[in-house]
Length: 191
Image (cartoon, rainbow, N blue to C red; front, side, top):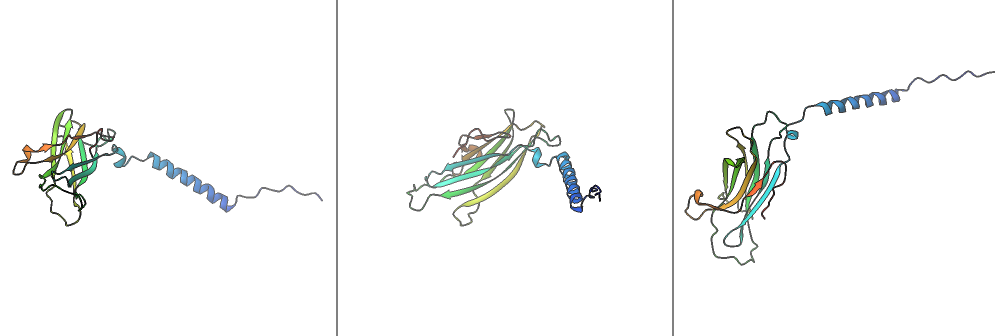
């Protein structure tokens, strides 16, 4: 008796499911890659900054840290803005530290935005916030620089400033400012 050749088996259900899932996964991946970028993907990487200034008593430290974010050139709807977010806090030396009997001058953080070499905006954040009773007097800030004439904001400077007692903010003396540029770390950092 002669055997008949074996006929191929019809595809199993498991094989059909695998093939179908692979096709669906490929379609989902292709649609995700073709989708428009989100707003976060259209921004430069935020530029971090951190500054510290020591008070005249040598024991009080005025600190700030934050990020500056520019919109990407690839975002045609973005205006010439820079978003600044950060926090400021006052820290004190340990109790066993010998401090001078001097009250530190009032401090503030001064921000300036520039288009070319022309200033397009200023913003200050004072340290005269109410103390929450903790080891740090911490506060947060969040603001946006807008270029009034539509020119892109090329860089932002951040500086720690102190005002002589009883004097106006216009008479403030500032440390060397830190320069923040889009898509990068600040070229100089102060600690």
